[in-house]
Image (cartoon, rainbow, N blue to C red; front, side):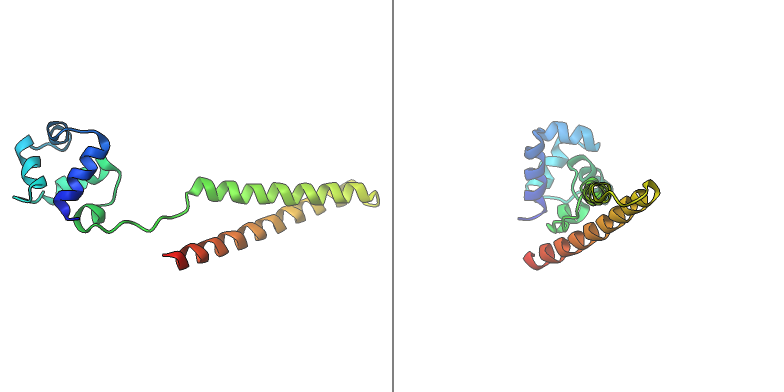
Length: 136
């Protein structure tokens, strides 16, 4: 797939006509038509505008290089908080059920469980990134 094909593909994927894309990027419909028929190539500023409009990188439009997917920050944050809560809860239930600790000791055990949860989340994230890198 060349740059002309990628522009046409992205335009159609968003459901834009050539006229609509031209209006959004600030060129004529004929300019978009020429880009898609390989009669000309867009200026760099237009490539940047299209990359923002289509939510892709300029590398994808120009060279067809798709970015390596990165883990969404929200997903990572959820992973860490999940592990912290799970391990802290387990530590808290165990220390409370043991019935031999003072309340201040129970709080320290819960905090220690949260720290262990953070460590486990980090290990899971590292292993996940290693596995996903091997697949590529």
